[in-house]
Length: 143
Image (spheres, rainbow, N blue to C red):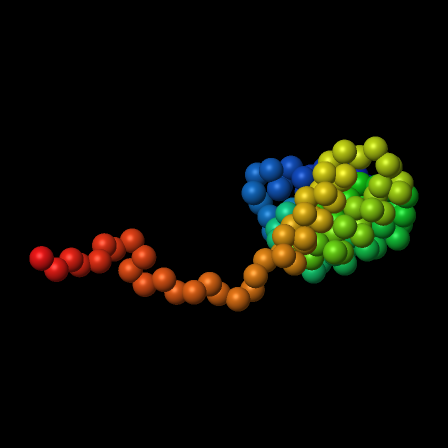
């Protein structure tokens, strides 16, 4: 009996909650075979949750192709990039989300934090400081 992608995604989410990761992945893959649009959304989230960022990115790109006006997908893609310390790409994705929904406060905050981190990294001195030997040790005195 064929199942709907919604049922399979719900079952997959329940498996994730029970930490049955392999079973969850199989259910999301089945959902994808039935409905690539909804399945790609589920797989993108699943793979990010399992820290498989390459597959998460693959399915986020596909999901955004199906739902280009979905600000949440663009925001999730930004988070995916930020987790990998790809802050410029994260900012681009978050800005795409704000073009769709300008009032997303969490996304605005993420952009500000990412820009501040990029600026801090630019201003950091990459050279090691001088080695200070015995910095807190008193000098011997002669009596």
